[in-house]
Image (cartoon, rainbow, N blue to C red; front, side, top):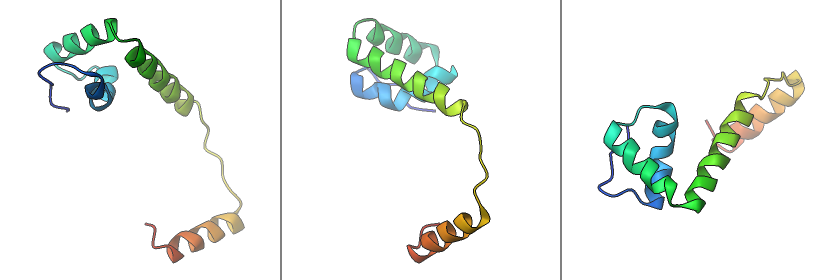
Amino acid sequence: MAKPPSDCRCRDIVSLLADYLDGTLDSVTTCRLQAHLEGCAPCIAFVNTYKGTVKAARQLKETDIPPELKDRLLSFLRQRNVP
């Protein structure tokens, strides 16, 4: 879990957001983060965008790709030493 900041700032939102939305932050950090969000329009927009992205990603469906494409992709990645 992310370490609670002494004073919640915009840059803290990024590192705390996943834990905040999962409900795993401690109550003190949650209160600090919520207090910050109440007065920071850019962070509210960031949180809303993040939530929308997570929601959209959860709606994606797995799709099988043709075997030839899979083979070409794996070959390409191996040549580039990508795990």
